[in-house]
Length: 426
Ligand SMILES: [Zn+2]
Image (cartoon, rainbow, N blue to C red):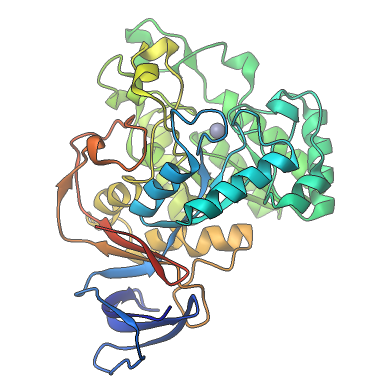
């Protein structure tokens, strides 16, 4: 299938927008030429981007698709469609399904369902321990062989240092990354929100910053000892960032991610006991938010991920203490970040795009993430002008659980192209 995208505004090497025509054939970007030049390709589908932004498709390395086992929350198909609607062309899904993706059959099932959905690239992670119980390592070589791209017990922290060290040794030997949800359970004890003013005011237990940072510190030492590529999930505290920054300085192979909500919201913003504001890690202090923003700016945090975590309405109505952790993320991520950081002049557009495309590709060794001839034709067209309010009833995701309802945002994706094929358009 051949495709020409006319009048595409792309971010040039100097960071300025340049009007181009993009020629795609065989699922690959063939040519990027000045918009004034005639792009001739017989029988090609032509899309006129009318000066809208065209970027390499966004990559989200931390998502929950809920299938198998929790199809009432999301399926691989609805999740992949939601991702496409948010401008994502590659997503990496977490193994905390039912059964847990701790065996080659489940990895294969995820890959098969993703293929049937035929929307975006879906890359499965496999669990570090069987059923994510922290007791017994999974079969790393078999899981790699079946198509898993890394190992993680996301949803819970690996409590045993010895277990984590063994996992890192195996992963290092296989040239695979370990991706860690950092949380020491002994410091959490069922708390639903972060320590702070909100928890005090509502008489709730608080999750302290150390519960995350203690695992980050422990794992950095283990990564140094084993030589593994260690990737920290959803960083949310100033202390974790300090440790990651130091580790990078001395050459430990550590990378890190942050979610849009931890860059935008603090515990002070939580309006009341509404579980759409409950996620793990929780919203922390303004000081932590500022540290996360700075870490994205200086590269201590390499990439931005959504931690898309759909739940049913009924589950989220159980209240702050009992509702499950998590919010949906695909369909609001880019508009939120664009509106809050780029439209306000804080970040260059090129930097935001890099943290959502080229950087995740670099960190995880993916071919995608670049807008250049020879790269996969995974592309996103974004309207940077039109302002629209977030309306969860329009989400392609089954999940409606977002704290951003009614937020007025710009930067909405209007079409998403995967391997040269339009998989979603407005
Ligand atoms: Zn997690």
